Length: 186
Image 1 (cartoon, rainbow, N blue to C red):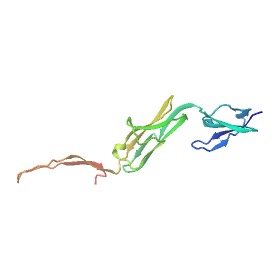
Image 2: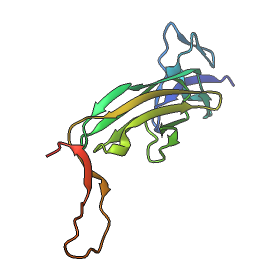
Image 3: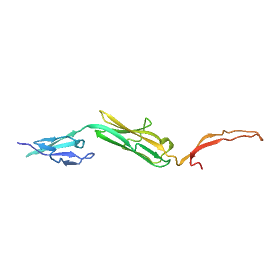
Image 4: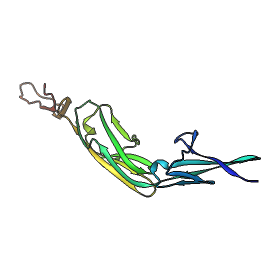
């Protein structure tokens, strides 16, 4: 009873759909063996080997991970955004595998952001600072950083000094201090 491999399949990432592996000068099939020369990160994934003969069929899955050094940069590296305007920081990375993406602001973890893109819908004063994107796997990590500056326009008023409640006798002179910052000043 002779056995033969009908086909090698590769699952489409993030789904249960599969497609036949395309054979070419770099990817060959010899008997039941799939041979990949000069493996690329794109070759990573889950493969399915299907074997059939005259009385039935069998299949087995295997996972291939092609590793590549991690590298990350945040773009734009410096941006100035006016108060109330949106800002977007993008973590562009290379390498494989990437298990986690995390963001820090001024050295503190931003638990609400874990994707490639960090969006701020309306920039506030506390949003200015240094942002870092970390990409990690079990063996290594890489990070990129960027600075977000607050533009000079449309900064709402902020009272820096003010007077306290006071009870005075009639006829006494007094000064009530109220000092604020903001832009525009009128």
